[in-house]
Amino acid sequence: MLSWVRKLRNSWLARVFFGALIVIFIFWGISNVPGLTGGSTAVAHIGGKPVDISEVQAEYHSELTAASQSGTPDLAARQQIAQNALITVLRQHALALIETQLGITAPDAAIRARVYAIPAFQTNGVFDQAKFNMVLQQNNFSPDHFLDLEKSNLTNSQLVLAITAGATPPQPLTDQIFAYVAQARTAETVSIATAAQAPPPAPADAVLQRYWKNHPQAFTAPEYRTIKLVILSPAVMAPSEPVSSAELADAYARTAALTHVNASRSFQVVTAKDAKSAAAIATAWQAGAGWTQIQATAAKADGTAVEFDHAEATQIPSQALAAAVFAASPNTVTGPVKGPFGYYVFKVTNAVAAGAPPLSTLAPQLKAEIQLRKAQTDVAQDVDNVQDALAGQTPLDQLPGNLGLTAVEGTLDANGNTLEGTPAPIPGGAKLKTAIVKAVFAAHLGDAPQLLTGPDNSYFAFTISTITPPAVQPYDQVKAAVAAAWTQDQLSREAETKAADLLAAVNAGKNFDTAATAAGDSVAMTPPITRGAQPVGIPADMVPVLFSLKPGQATMEQTPDGFVVAGLTLITQPRPADDPQATAQIAQALTKSLQNDVAESFLSGLQTRDNVQVDPKLLAQIYQ
Image (cartoon, rainbow, N blue to C red):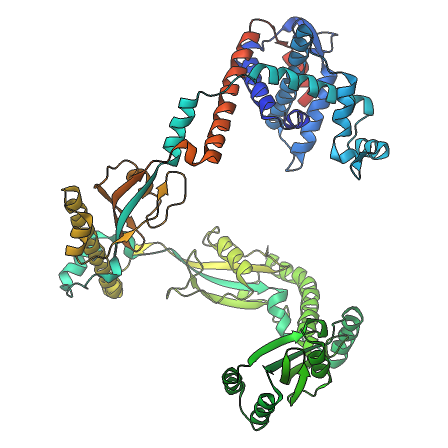
């Protein structure tokens, strides 16, 4: 289906036409015709003319290839693809029938101009016959077939445009929709933060116990599982792998042959306007003044002080300064050096020579790479032995100690946290930990350990010794948490009460500023807010309510931090002439909608014209 739409150059008019035609074929015209079976290859008839099965098969295989890129379609999916292919072909025939009746044709000159204008067939803006042939060959099109498609596209576009061209929206409708979309509302707001409320007095223990009983879900411990775990992971084993100096030197030699860096310098430089100021700065610097002090001295002398980090010669703005910097010794104050912008005093803090980075720079990375390769080899050698041991029902804590295994034992929840709420110390990285926790909570108590494959060439096995189901924690254990939750609840209630009081006062007729000031709240003003734009100063959920209010009315909304009260102060209603671009966009959208209605009305007339009949048995041969 989509391939035919693409053939029509993604014309939205064609999509409207074809979309409505699909509905008509599905709900009106397609019927079972047993009489068409037998030796006939006509999978359908439309307008009394046969549709050969080969046409549907070609479209089916094209759509099946596209669908197979995301997996092998099952029988139901193949059946749907075959139905789509049939509908696509029937659309082509329906259009051809009415185009023939109406005498719509595409002249050869128009087809030629259309093809010559396709950028894929052009070289330097001119049609290229060789490129035309190459592109068609790459897409399995013959020139004749492609030209037939372009001729069909051109005739189809003439038909659709002729049907829908006159559909335009009335200006009053455009103006009405513009008024709805462009209307803006401005509000005064007060934010009442929960955290800003005065803490309540400490409650009696009985109050906290009642709160604990009334909120069991808040104080229910999750399910915990106690496990024994062994991990066989290159990432875990790698840090303990030995690396000799010879191995490191060999790895550096290979890397150095492929690595090259340009010479660079890191340095601090002061630019002074005159030689005297530069000399004074150099003297102070050479006497031991720090960089912060030198920066302050340069500022007093109307100079500038900047730092360059690993700058190459071409990245230094002055050639004179670049030459001096690359000739200077590190950690030595040099200058003054005259340049086009004044006099330079500088100190090189780091120098990197051209060529491969030194071994000292690359050694940590090279060592880690060697260790990981060794660990991967060890894991590949050990994994079979671990599997054999587990198959022999060897307990995890009795597995041989020479298999590179890392053993862990402890209790955790489904989020990978311990009883204390801290992350369980499972080695091997976040991906491996996630895989282990998922497997642990999918297993059952008493399951025999199996070696499971984890991420990054890792393996693990575990046993579950106990499962502690979720349970409300004893009050004495969570008393502090209960007190904190009760206090937060009281603060939220206080903030909500203040917000509700302000809301009630405003909606009772009191001025928003006056009511907010009396409550000790500060008032902010939002920018103009429209229905479609992202709101500023109020929660998004408050926008629809704001557009239902009259000036002087207020509303409130809870936020993650507290509550917001907003009072509508101004309604701004632009005129269409104030925003011609938005008006034009609305008119264009309405035009598309009306043209869609016209196309559907036209297609409803085809219901009495074409008698579409399908042979379901022949169609089934395509996808089974």
